[in-house]
Image 1: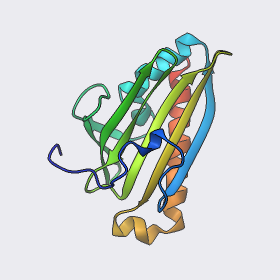
Image 2: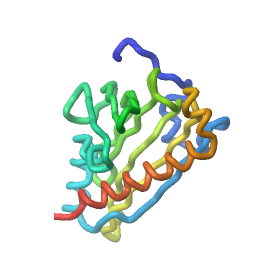
Image 3: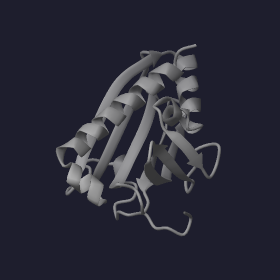
Length: 166
């Protein structure tokens, strides 16, 4: 996949507001745990692709840990979902990454997963994404495609919440 180009022009745009126009947008902000140990466990699982596995996806990644430029192909049943990590954030109280779509992904766009340990000790998990259909299947799905994306987002939140528990 290394030779493949990302399928959208706004690389890194999940960092900023507003998200690019011409796409559907996803925003999710959930409290998933409490305290430094929960934050560290969630961040470790996020960077080891465990969130995706816990959400029911199979993961074939170019590296065991998330890093800029790492390609990953996620699979759900017969659906192939190729992506490339476009940036990471590794601060004391904020960690996460974003990946963008590669050719063969049913959508085109970017999704960011960010964990934050607040001053009050809450572990927050934020998902920001912009996407639009890229495949015939995604276009034919119409509103069902957005419902599927919301379901996937909910599964990611549940998966991260699991990672914060001892």
